[in-house]
Amino acid sequence: MDQRSLIAGLALIVLGAYLGFVQITGFGGEAIVALIGLAFLGAYAVTRTYGFLVPGAIMTGLGTGVLLETGIAPGGGAVVIGLGLGFAAIYLIDRMASPASAHWWPLIPGGILTVIGVFIVAGQQRWLERMEWLWPVALVVIGAALILTQLGRGRARRDEPAERTTEAP
Image (cartoon, rainbow, N blue to C red; front, side, top):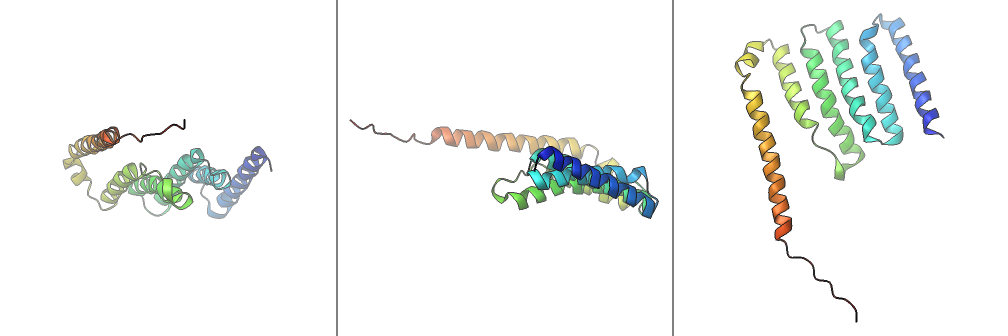
């Protein structure tokens, strides 16, 4: 099957699901972000292309947060939690699809956004305002730790003795 036909078919399924969802629930534009995300996730499921997984998980998480915000949890926290969980989903899905080579980077923004969302839902925005200096410091510390770790690994590789090869006469 041609990949373009497959992706076009997925797009039509998502459009039909969206229109049916709007008729059943009364939601409108709030659902479109989540459904576009689901289309990307469908494309990832078929092609295993990481480039479909990232926008798919982020948009699905964000769209789910928007739907929850609109329907049952107003206040802003649901959108932030949804976005954070979308980032975390990138790692989880990638881990299930390829355990040995899963990318861990989505856990950083996912964790930060989820924690902020929980603070918002819990009504602790003042706490976040008091800690406004903590986020830049935490990012600098994490970034420096990553760089130092990589520098240490590079130094260890350079210090390893080179394998000797013997040539046949």
